[in-house]
Length: 159
Image 1 (cartoon, helix red, strand yellow):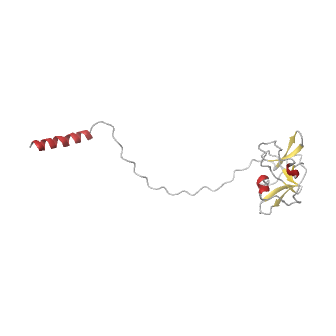
Image 2 (cartoon, rainbow, N blue to C red):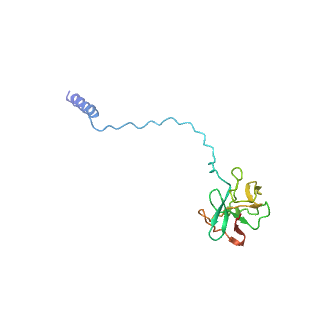
Image 3 (spheres, rainbow, N blue to C red):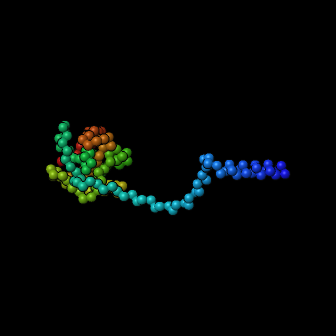
């Protein structure tokens, strides 16, 4: 009988301990049901700021120069032919083409002709008076003209 009283007391102590006000442990979170996959967002191009395709800028040394919508200097390549780019491969990586992003317009003071050529890779490129236009990868900010005279074949585009 003593053993059954001891056993009952032991079981009661365990049950009472489970009801104490000590910190309770929350059960492990139940994994939520898998969520359906969402379709990836389409690459939507960021609209370009309205304005002319090319504009004029003043350079203290070079005078009037042509710049793109972003204000970056535009260049011509003396190895190009009329309405044909001869810059490809590493060249086009270093001298990215000015690609049209809408109707071609020239700012006031630019009297030449703007046109679009198709490069050998099928990409369109803006040309001024038949000369394809490029940016220079080493120009870092508006007003830079570090591509002027590079290799004796790259020159700032002039109106």
